[in-house]
Length: 178
Ligand SMILES: Nc1nc2c(c(=O)[nH]1)N[C@H]1C(S)=C(S)[C@@H](COP(=O)(O)O)O[C@H]1N2
Ligand SMILES: [Mo]
Image 1 (cartoon, rainbow, N blue to C red):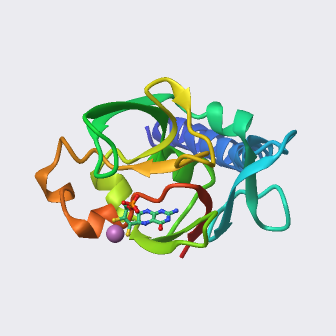
Image 2: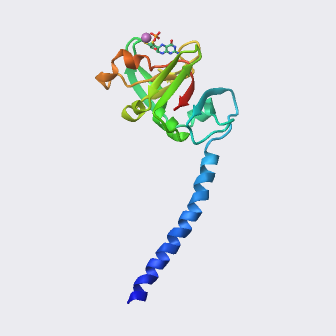
Image 3: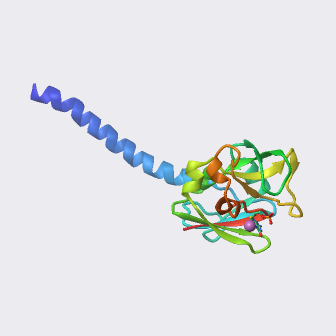
């Protein structure tokens, strides 16, 4: 009886030991592979506490790499435009997950040297978009582009507040995770 009981257990142990051993290198390889090298002009740079990098510890993205993130649409009014706008882009949460970001604060920097600290919790609590398009038109550096952080302000009254308006960084170029 004892030997009958121990045999499946021993097999289970051996199998789980093998799968743990074989999983570890697979995961490491998958992470190395996950971030391609940019082929074109770098649009966004991520630094700080990230698990994936492709250039000297930083994660740099060209537009095509960003466009490959899960497409998300957000319709909202803003404090700087008239009426409800349709924004296309990707979720900040998906971008942070994509590079294995861990931390409390994301420091966002813009082309015009605007810098603001944003709590990471915002991106778990709200579907915050990194917009590439407004009403179907690609955002240009001359007009809030190429990337604009857009909060779902119409869907949450608490977001209709100056503290959040500061976090709508337009001309976004860098995110530092701390
Ligand atoms: N790149 C960039 N983003 C920015 C700012 C800025 O100066 N540069 N100002 C912030 C502030 S203070 C606010 S209230 C909102 C709206 O700013 P605006 O009315 O000047 O467009 O954008 C935020 N995003
Ligand atoms: Mo402001």
